[in-house]
Length: 235
Image (tube, rainbow, N blue to C red):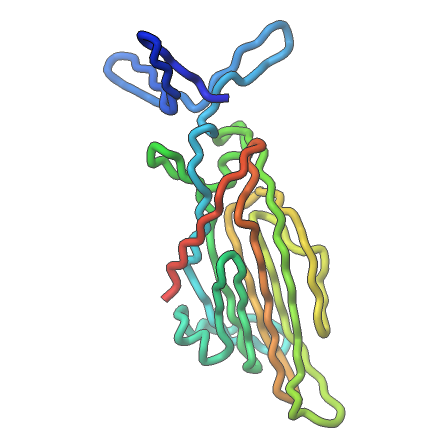
């Protein structure tokens, strides 16, 4: 809960609390009191959370061999990705597509929590008592993966590719997809990163694969619904 202070009948929310010794001032992140063996938090800086930012910062396009091993980096821009597939961003839905044999397209991002006083921390810092707050953070991630054979292909065909959908320490509980699959998982918040990959290792006909991830518009932090803001820095 927040802490309020009053003077002359005027009450205001104290969204920043500081203590100082010998000219050094630091903000207090959270406060607890205890009776017997029961400890209760009576204020916390999570009351001052403004929004969560997902910064989409990097694309990597790589060469892969028939076993799926990376052999070289081709480029790190949207223009390069569009030569071998593409990356699309629509609100909180992200898709990477690969339509070229021997190529892999991957999108990367990181989550940050912003406070009203301008402070910024990685989202993962909130869930650890040792590092920051020991907060509860929860949200769902919807994903889909597809391997599509070109309609121009005929006769017997074969192909193999790779995909991944990673968010804050967790991935879908499925390894192999030969046509299409989708589902939902809840990140463990043991990490701070997001990555989505689509690749084609081998194929004897034209084939396209994509991996898609959809995040909610709000993230639950200690029972509060905090808006998720997408910061698209891709170029």
